[in-house]
Length: 288
Length: 94
Image (tube, rainbow over all chains, first blue to last red; front, top):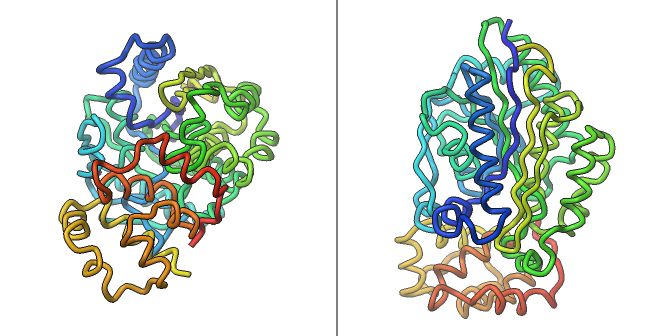
């Protein structure tokens, strides 16, 4: 039987690599976020995973409203990214990883039996929501991944409870894999975040939004019902037009079966949207 | 109302350098044959991002679009926010 050996949630803010490069000590929270990425990399390495299931929202780069899926499993043999226009706009690194096609196909097949009709793709690129975290967490690019996209951009997006349930389903399917693989589940997302919306500069005057404080506290307690209740579309939108990216942390909470995380940290700054990190280390969420 | 068509144009221009060059060179030609209302077409042609926002353009795409479609890399963040904030949060579902 396979086992989940580590669960990690991180920010995927595409401006952070440039800020780390040029302004690492501009504010304490920037250095703290940088150190948190190093800690996440260490935790992942210590868990010795064979494969990474990576969950993130695409930013209308790969998927668009001509045919918008809610949850997608990528099953092409190789995943590459980010997109050229993302490389032009930000100081991002290219990333390439093999895809564990067998695990991807099992997610699809068993998804049907577990209440999730995943879409799937045999031709795709992964955007910064995947490549930015992976560049920090596993710069070696030596582990196969299974990309799972979520629609957090194009309303109507699935409700928070659906994200939680899909996380639980993914966990159940991974636990039941017939292989002896050690699996890490990684998700990237956002706390309060606005790009192109009226809240875009709010961080400069309100670097610790109430949304961030509330959600950090509820996640720290592992209070899944409260997280789901508080993460309504209306509340997410009020906190910033990009805040629905938080829902991938709700999915992760489902994958952890609603348990209290081992580690939670929020690094708030006036320079950019806050960085958020959370983990469920193996011993606190099953066997390792 | 053709929010999807607005988003489609903005996405093409924001993502593809050749599309951005074509749009900047002759926006009217670029938009010819697109299923846009007169108001939507005029807003895209004049770079009136406030009007596009009010019409329900996707905010994330709108910001990216202004970076490459408008002169001088588009409005500064403070100017952009000052223009759209009074318009509230229009529905941007397609």
